[in-house]
Image (tube, rainbow over all chains, first blue to last red; front, side, top):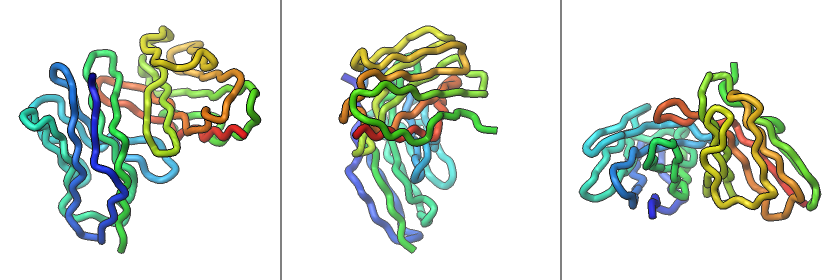
Length: 112
Length: 110
């Protein structure tokens, strides 16, 4: 079936460190891929997306590239800030109905 | 000007009670969702409505009944609450590829 797997957290980094959160997926066809972010006590917000192979989504210094050959959509940021501390969810959408399948979330904690 | 709002924000209740959570979106979207997030942050879709019609109904106990009086509202009624229902429930609406989430309702069943 369709599924999303993320690296386990929590991930703890110092400010200005490089961030990678791994995400791989299993899906039939060609899903769209997303990263959502959940700040403490809030709902999820779309961070970035990619709708086809080799697309790169980017926002707020975060990037992820849709890699069909490795079925991956890893999230990266060159220099994290304390304000990036949140839970990050990788997700896929595999049909027109808009149903999102989420990974288990990766908690990121950035220390000053 | 809140996009997706939910009430109440917190809900503490006894096992066996019946409760409702309300959701409203002022974005003009046709499609709305309910998600459940457990204590480990795992997020799973429960229901989806498109223009007041149910289009997704995941494997959810029939104690949970969504109701959509109009396309801007999607409420969730839960009968005979159980301890395992304790979670954060998120409402969302969708425009094209993007889903917009409400702030969540934190339900605690004692």
